[in-house]
Image 1 (cartoon, helix red, strand yellow):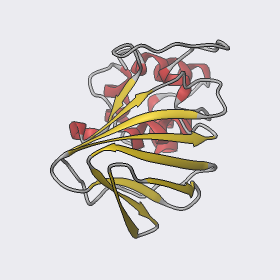
Image 2 (cartoon, one colour):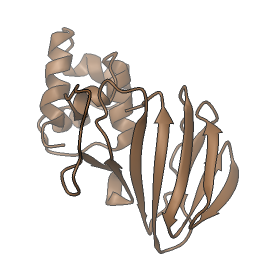
Image 3 (cartoon, helix red, strand yellow):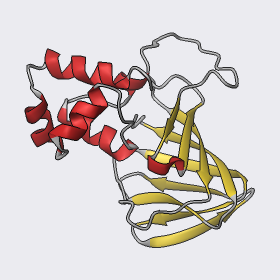
Image 4 (cartoon, helix red, strand yellow):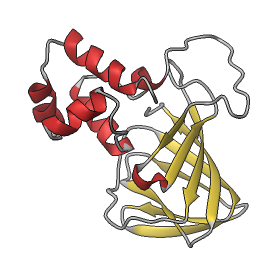
Length: 180
């Protein structure tokens, strides 16, 4: 994540955009774009999606450059992204650039923001709860998953992962096509 701002800046420059152009296209403030590009703030995942979309890109372009046929990711060496307030941690179990499927270990840390937006995108998702409990909100219908439960849904249904209680929840998710 330390190089995220530099990659965003370079992509913006390559497209011949100034900070105001990117702010207009992304719906974010020029001040926030500037701070992100200078690595002064870490943007929320939703804001990275907005920036990537405005730059006609994917989030994968900003997180990883690897394009090998084989990859081994050891514990502690995987790419990690956090949402604001560190309430959600996304740990990428495999390379996220140039793949047909992505696998993510998601940790929910005792925090739920009721203002989080439901998201939708092309593809399919499948998740399995390793530890704790979580809620999967599918277009306003909330499904509680406990340790050992799994779920599948079409990603074009507006969705969001939420904390169930004040305990940590760890789950593994597979998504296709990759949305990062």
